[in-house]
Length: 364
Ligand SMILES: NC(=O)c1ccc[n+]([C@@H]2O[C@H](COP(=O)([O-])OP(=O)(O)OC[C@H]3O[C@@H](n4cnc5c(N)ncnc54)[C@H](OP(=O)(O)O)[C@@H]3O)[C@@H](O)[C@H]2O)c1
Image (cartoon, rainbow, N blue to C red; front, side, top):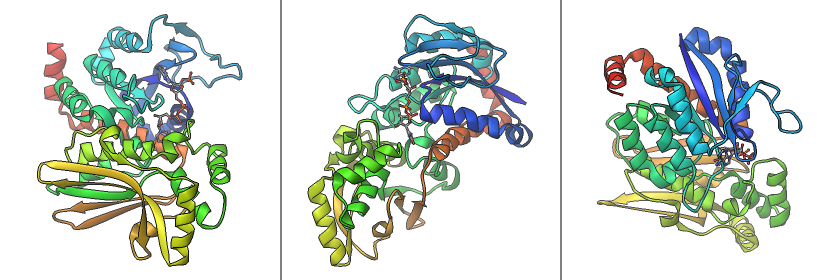
């Protein structure tokens, strides 16, 4: 049985659903994968970092006032210092590869910070990292992957694109020897919902308000409608699948507006669809990427992606095109992505790579 010690950096919608999912899946995780979990600390922006009493086996739910009912020990420094401190304090778990930092802080579209710093500190301290935050893979994939390799720890981020639908896992685990040449996709649920609604004559603001009420639009809606969220996902996909070194700022970007709605209505009347298409392609040594509304013929797979659905088409050398369609997205799916990343780490431990791990642990 592997008991993972979890340090939750960010404890909002995704992290709270992750913790409740761990509870729901507890028996299965133990019997099928030999996994147990224990939350050892939590950090949020407003409440700051705190260690959770070691007898607590799952994270406490927040009470109405935000206070935790569990016994906690507040840590008076920054989140970054908290991660470093936790890695030292729980060095036995870190050495054994059982300490995992679960990074679910808010996306920062300017630089990907402080999430990148959190990931770096965790890896340097001997912890694995699982995250649903797009920032680290979108801004710093290459250097973080190198840091993970050097530390002999995992940096996993399946939840960063299309929630729990496997894309990074799919390519890493099931497509050996296949080269990804490029991709095209509809990767932002809010803009696709708005475009679908506007085609039917609904006003832009009304469709956006529905996505905000459903908790699907980002807190700052401009991240969705201006194409930033799609650009961050495009950069992450291009960095990981195409070996690029992009950031969201190097993705050519055009968002959607009320005017795109007029275009979408006219296109629909002519049997075509307007979609916010994210794409990247490798040409020689160069990878170019863009996000923009495009008018697609009806027989394009992306033209049939309705409402909140997402889809990606991977262009490969040996298997031609592979399509992945996400029919529905939810917090459970994003939480599942974190869970699947945790199982990947448990499988590593089981497979035992252990000779390398023990050697690395002795060196630390
Ligand atoms: N929601 C989804 O369906 C979904 C899907 C895929 C990916 N994601 C990504 O997953 C991440 C989490 O999403 P969410 O919906 O859970 O967001 P959320 O509800 O806004 O939670 C974010 C959490 O991060 C905390 N935080 C922010 N900066 C921090 C810092 N410097 N140190 C410590 N804690 C900090 C916040 O604390 P306060 O509450 O005190 O501000 C909050 O607890 C985001 O990067 C998002 O883009 C979300």
